[in-house]
Length: 158
Image (cartoon, rainbow, N blue to C red; front, top):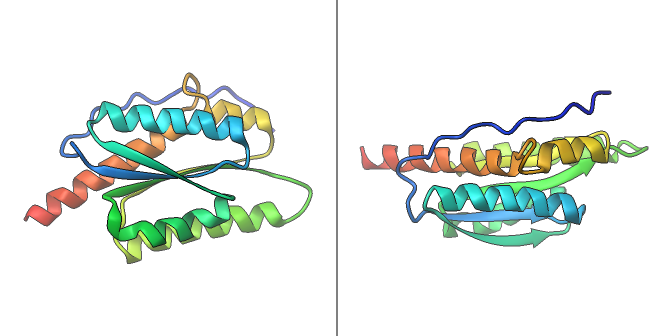
């Protein structure tokens, strides 16, 4: 299994998201990795002139539920967390159900959601994806959220 070094993606500024209210929903199960994901997301949101608030949930499985509860109060959402494979099938359920829950919310409720739940085999892979100077998946997730907020705003105007 590879632990290749990730390279952060160059992301352009997203037009049309100034003052957008973004809720970052984070699982702090792996605190240091969560901190790296948050740092990347907050940096990307600020760079684009949007504002963020952060709430913590116990694990990745709870992220879709928290977003559902907050759906009417924000312009977009960033889902952040880390799930590292263990010795049981629990990993598969948490990864699959959290991803399915977020996709269901995105499509059914037309929510702008950036997916930043890192699903990996070990901590080295998690760091390769989470660290700002490496994969910066928190920044990627925030950028995806902002891009969807911009599309929603654009199409509501027409």
